[in-house]
Length: 251
Ligand code: PGA
Image (cartoon, rainbow, N blue to C red; front, side):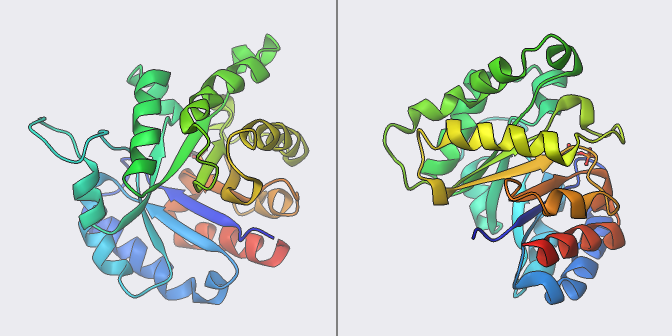
């Protein structure tokens, strides 16, 4: 049985002092579920330093929301792998739909981040998902197949640990989540697709999109759902801990 993975994506919602306080509060109380669940917090770049210090010596891991796919260099405004490593980052979100849509990030750029992260020793969390229009047009599988197509370049490196987050775009920040049954069906399809490239026990498939303390248990009890990527509900200690506890109980 894979250990469930619960990731907080704080986006650009918290200033460093707020991030630090929330990280400390979560770390203090998460101990009761930490044996049963892997927890990762992804603050903004400017908060990584203080959150890293707040999490030192705890069981919680640190994630970054993005990266420029190079170790370091003369590139104004970017953050590369060396800096993230020095801050104790272990996971990196890549291909979040907000970046695909608002910043027009392409599959090619996402592929560089994904493979660069693996080569640099990080666990990439590849976000995939269809828009409402694509879903209505029956294009979900085609969209997911295209977004997961970057895995083909793993070229036989079947022992690489990767995380795929299925995040239907229409469910992100809307309060309308995918039903757990529908998400589980998509997860089974994703797992089947992904395990053509990576061995079964190296893949973790998360659901993301309006997960909260009320619906978390229903996602957690689905065998095909290995964890969740949480936006809005991760900004409050109570709701985030309740989500982590739901996964600790169910798995
Ligand atoms: P949400 O965001 O939980 O606020 O819907 C999820 C995400 O964007 O990862």
